[in-house]
Image (cartoon, rainbow, N blue to C red):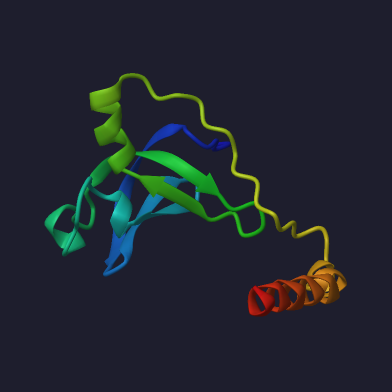
Length: 128
């Protein structure tokens, strides 16, 4: 099954850690509901909301392009009940790209200009 961001899917809780719950989505695919995404508001203990082997409906928040990890949310469904139909989500685009390997070069290229600008601002503050 091809998953998409914003898609509503069902799964089964396979494990719970203090930071979140792992959900089997079928076909050897697994996602994680972070503790902050299991309920609206503060969650002191995730075990108060989720149990192992519990069937859950979730929304796909993100799919990491490089690792294939799937981030899930139950909290979005709580908002859905209040706000109406789920809107189509765009895939998040990060400033990094695993196909491009230029490391810190863009920062290094601009560093001298940033240092000169900062020194100029310091000089202006000292003279005023």
